[in-house]
View 1 (cartoon, rainbow, N blue to C red):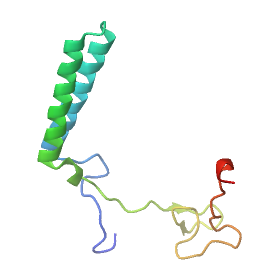
View 2 (cartoon, one colour; view 1 turned 180 degrees about the horizontal axis):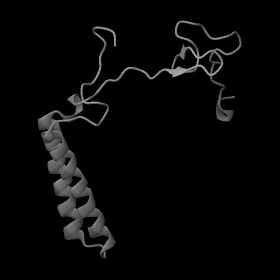
View 3 (tube, rainbow, N blue to C red; view 1 turned 90 degrees about the horizontal axis):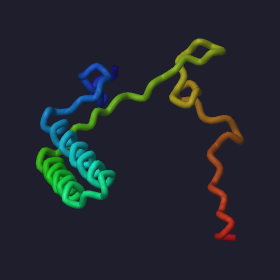
View 4 (tube, one colour; view 1 turned 135 degrees about the vertical axis):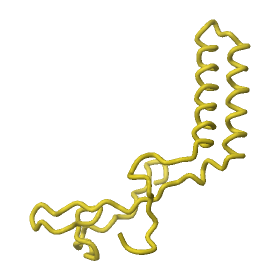
Length: 114
């Protein structure tokens, strides 16, 4: 791995601090409580209790900084079946330009835009 390249040291799993997982768990529980409340009648008290738990989970997400728990991985490279050499993420050898005619075409206008 090149020096200075962003990578994760957690072995490819889903990293995160315990506090971040706690906030996510509170959000999931709130969503489940609200969903059960809607399925049981609807039981509006249970629904609004679930909404309150979700709001608490949202506050925990903000306080704990959950979105800072991002693991950045290098792009995966797959070998080219014909040559056996490493290929880039789209199947081309790294640093090799796309063949003519394979470049991304401009988007076509929608029928309503014509």
